[in-house]
Length: 279
Image 1 (cartoon, helix red, strand yellow):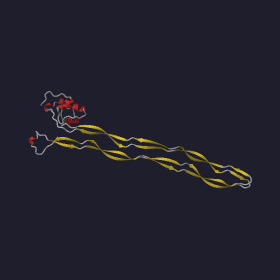
Image 2 (tube, rainbow, N blue to C red; image 1 turned 90 degrees about the vertical axis):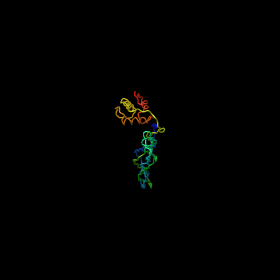
Image 3 (cartoon, rainbow, N blue to C red; image 1 turned 180 degrees about the vertical axis):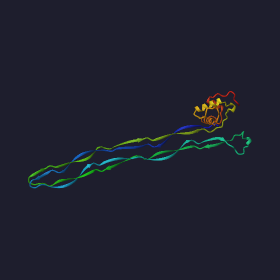
Image 4 (cartoon, one colour; image 1 turned 30 degrees about the vertical axis):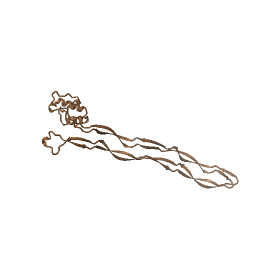
């Protein structure tokens, strides 16, 4: 049999889509002092003192802060079936009902058997919801301060009253927040897909008889197979099961008639033919 030649092709599978993330640097605050007038200045008199009243005010001690929060992206794992070896048909020996046993030596029935395709389950992460941001607002802080306000001025001799000032610690924004956008590339895995070109064909080739199989010839064949990457077992000059399997695998992969040690295979390996060859 001459089997179809295998053809391997690279196959790229995207297991995770590209995405975008955001890195947020919070704002930096600085402590400062603010002068607040807690009592106004005015004019009083020695005869009739002035009259004051208490007034309560709210003083801003910490301004409103807006902070951006990053909401990470949401992924979903999906399973995908990938064909890594296509379906193919092979011919193999079989027995047919109604054939006389005396004719089995002259008749070799062949039956077609379909080898199903080989698949592989690949998991990939798919972006369902991209990364987003939201703004969180921290309200401003105030402090109540009571100050005296002139309600009724003094009469007679005027007396000047200086205003009273107090320093209050407050927080101010020294550096605003910063947002940095980063792109995450997609993740890709590489697979090998095997296809078979052509159909199996029946071919006639001249094979070597047992009398032609010398240990030196078999050793040469075993060395050629091992060099090509096919394991023939120990290099012992015997055409055993391991050597036969390696030879048939090589014949099938290189378009040679498979099933026996043929002159075609020896010529392919450039192995000299035996001097006395049985026909």
